[in-house]
Structure formats: C-alpha cells, structure tokens
Length: 416
Ligand SMILES: NC(=O)c1ccc[n+]([C@@H]2O[C@H](COP(=O)([O-])OP(=O)(O)OC[C@H]3O[C@@H](n4cnc5c(N)ncnc54)[C@H](OP(=O)(O)O)[C@@H]3O)[C@@H](O)[C@H]2O)c1
Image (cartoon, rainbow, N blue to C red; front, side, top):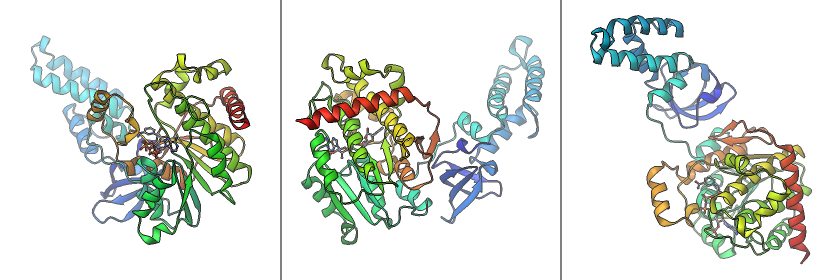
C-alpha cells in the first residue's frame, strides 16, 4: 500500500484495532490522533484500514464464496461460475444475480488493487473532516518555533485562519499583511494581548508594485517564511491594476513575484509558499505560455473572468518551480475548496449554486496544507494538496518565459 492512499483527516483503524484520524502522512507512515484517547500515535500505512472497509469487503467476498486471501483471478472464476447458475436468462433469481454482480464489481475494483484505501473509495464510506491548520502545526511539532513569518492576505479567509493558528505556536514574529493599516489594526485588536505582541503590520495594496517595493523596504531582514496567500478571483470585467496590468494576474502573480524576488535577494534560507488552486491544472490546457499569450493577459479583448484567474494560479505554480530551480525553498499548494468570500465577484445565483453543490472546507481546514508547506519537510518546487505532494509536470521553458516577462513588467511599472 502506498503512503498517498491516505489523506489528512481520513478516519482509519490500525491492524491492532485502534481507530483515529490521520494528521500527517509521511513516507510510509502516518501520524494519527486516536479517537478514544486523543493521543498522537504513529502507524505504518501498510497496517491501516479505513473503518468498516475491511468488514464491507469481507461481506462482498463472502457472497462470491471467496476467502480473504483469494486473488482477482479466483474472484473472476467464482463470479463466472455463479453467474451461469444464477443468471435470470438461465432461470436464476434476478435479486441473487444482482447481489453477485455488485459483489463482483466491488471485488474487482477493490481486491485487484489489494488496497483497502481503494476499497474505501469505491464503497463510499463516509469521509471524515479534514484537520485544521492548528492540528497540522502540532503534528509537525511546531517546526516554526522562533521563526518570522509573513502572510499576505492575512486579514480574512484562509490567510487569517492560518495567522490565528500560527499565533498559537511559538513563532517569533508574524507579519500580517493587509491592503491598509486599518484592516490589519482591526484584526490585531481582536487578538489576546500575548498574541498581539508577536504581530507586525505589513501594509501594501498588491495592485501597486510601488507599494510592494515600499513594503519590502520596511524589513530590515527578510522573514524566514513568506506565505503568498492574498488573491482575487473572477472579476467580471477586465480591470486594471494601479500599474495598468490585468488585476487578477497583477495581484495574484506579479505582486508576489516582486515581493518574493526582492526578499530573496537578501536571504539564503527563505521558504516561500505560493497559494495556487486546483484549477491551475487547466492553465496548461488553456495556455500555451509564450510571449504572445503573456501579452494577451493584459489585453482586455482576450479577458475571461475565470480564464485569467486560472492563468494567475498557473503562474503561481510556474513561479514556485523557477524559484526552486534557483535554490530557494519554494513550494506551491492548493487549499482545496474553501468557504471564504473569494467568490464575491461571481453573480449571486452562481455563488448560491456553487455553495449548495460543493462541500467546502472551513478556512482553518483550508489553511492546513499551507501550514504543512510552511512547517514540514517539503520538496522544493513541488505541488501540494491535502498536505501531500502531487505530481505536476515541470515546464522549464514556460517558467523562464514567465520569469522574464514578469521582470519586464515590474521594471516598466517602477520606471514611472
Ligand atoms: N477559497 C477557495 O476555495 C480557494 C480555492 C483555491 C485557491 N484559493 C486561493 O487562496 C488564497 C486565499 O483566498 P481566500 O479564499 O482566503 O479569499 P479571501 O477571503 O477573499 O482572501 C483574500 C485576501 O487577499 C487580499 N487581497 C486581495 N486583493 C488585494 C490587494 N490588491 N492588496 C492587498 N490584499 C489583497 C484580501 O484583502 P481584502 O479583504 O482587503 O480584499 C484578502 O485578505 C487566494 O490566493 C485564492 O486564490 C482559494
């Protein structure tokens, strides 16, 4: 069984019978919080089962007359033999045949893979809640102790949830970024006194590269970790940033590009977490990233409210990969689908429909993968979802194109 068969928050049972929730998946091992005692325990992934999956598989196998050790060929032979006997065309009982058919379907999908995790997926057992950022930080043993962390977009949504979780840890200093000082002050005022002392305001409207420059200048030394979380999505019309570029791309990608490249100049141990999206994978399909397409990003007649958001999130991924190639410990992640106001620009009917049709995570759950990327041992340049590495292709040429194009746009904006 492979480690990635388990996701954070999955309810599992161990071979010895203990049940718990997965807090962290590492090479071949998981960290569990035991359901009965609340204790943390480690277990090998090869010794785990989803609760009920073992029982459900055994029931289906019993219908086919198979023992637990029977392989896929035996399952096929048993089904063919029993189907000849019970097929309705041959006078068999339709109900018996249907239960045989169902059992065989489950068995071929599950037993063929010999993975109880796969069985769990097909048997549709209830999925447990995803852990919160706080739980992930506890599981990574507070690796951020004594570190300075900057979170962009920390005044609401996922960024705020992550900031609150980090303030529970022994971080040295937390730079809370917001677009104006009143917004940050409002957040800080709500915190307990001990946490307030660890907070520093980092103010910049990310639609202005000049303000990003001014923000960088306020730092005497770069923080240890930068979490690039600020973002806007699905603006209905082409909107210009204060520098005259398309807003979604300028805020989500270009501002973070400038912030991080400036900070990285004077740090040899910076960790960068770019917050992308599951949708970024459509970026490659839609966007053959060359200079012509990049020019199109700033062309109002090529604007698509969703396409430009996807492009900016795809650029987050390419940027993290470029940084990693240059020796910066940069990773990119998706928070999953999270209930925040990121969809505020969508038409209300679409927003209602999306909220009704999808099971969104709470912001503190959405922040879990960001917390993992900021504090666990990670692979530079890799893409993370559910606090696990997900394979994405490397795109060296597109990464270089984007880097050069971004540098040109930053230079042009700051020249004025
Ligand atoms: N929610 C999801 O389902 C989801 C899914 C995939 C990826 N993401 C990504 O997760 C990140 C966080 O999103 P969220 O869901 O937490 O959304 P959110 O609640 O809308 O938070 C976005 C943050 O970015 C800040 N921001 C936006 N434009 C800014 C600007 N020009 N200057 C300074 N700050 C600015 C916002 O500040 P103001 O409040 O002042 O506007 C806010 O703090 C985004 O990068 C988003 O693309 C979210």
